Image (tube, protein in one colour):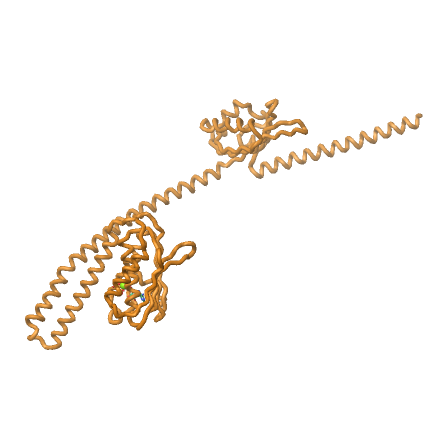
Length: 404
Ligand SMILES: Nc1ncnc2c1ncn2[C@@H]1O[C@H](COP(=O)(O)OP(=O)(O)OP(=O)(O)O)[C@@H](O)[C@H]1O
Ligand SMILES: [Mg+2]
């Protein structure tokens, strides 16, 4: 009996030691978890809170106290004290968060402002209602982060972007005004040059007609050259004036049947030179939105070039079509004529830039500049591909932007 009592006492004592050892270890584990949580909180710059829905008891973590600048020793603030810290303009949204949390178990997010000891701070919070039916608990849980620095940076970036936009708008307006002035200037200069030029040509003609017999052959040849040069200069001026009109004219934005315009341009070219053997291919049904007159000029110039630069070949093929390039529709005019050195493809769209001599193919070098200007005014782009004696292809896009 005594032995069994002693045995029982030993068993109880052993169990006590084991149990208290387990409790100590569990306690140490909880302590460790809490410290880790605090470290994690500090590292992430976040704070946690938890509220028992039934009793209203509220707990704030150390991290949350740090965010709000409150003293952990005084515990979590009550509802009134909490709402006093929230910026007056954000209080309604905060009340709404609690209303939504009470209504369901969904996650609720809010960005709001507080006054931390008088200083405005931006916070971001996410909260959720957690009901654990097994443990019989019902809690609101939340995590809060101070995003003041991020917010400040975003505001700075936005304000810089705004300033930049303003600057771009201001400079574009300046540039537009300068362009308009230049355009007006070149228009009036070109216009004024026409009159003296007409006199030079007219008096040279009068000299030839009335005093031609007083000159020897060289003298008459010189006068003929003066006339030829003035006439060419007259054409250059006319083309410049036409180019200037392209930029100054009002633009319409209407559906335009490009295939029909191309057919018409080719018909005119054929009528001017019916003897030429040119196979003309026009893809049917190509339409775009833009100014009908200006787009007609684009096709006249491009098809006129294709017609002209194939003229030294006994037969030729000229094509107007469209294709998809990087998801965008590109129209093109292609020929199998003289072509050009691709190294100079970029120059072709500048005024007076020519890759062929006037005695080879006549022209002033304004046609492609006109094309580029019209296409750019429509918000599109132009480019050229070609090789010497292997033809040329001119591409353009028309994104169908509104008329500017
Ligand atoms: N289809 C083409 N094939 C080969 N070269 C071309 C073609 N189209 C244009 N070019 C080259 O580009 C240059 C510029 O063309 P642009 O149409 O501006 O001038 P142009 O045809 O010489 O004169 P115009 O002002 O009368 O049109 C031409 O002089 C020519 O060298
Ligand atoms: Mg041309």
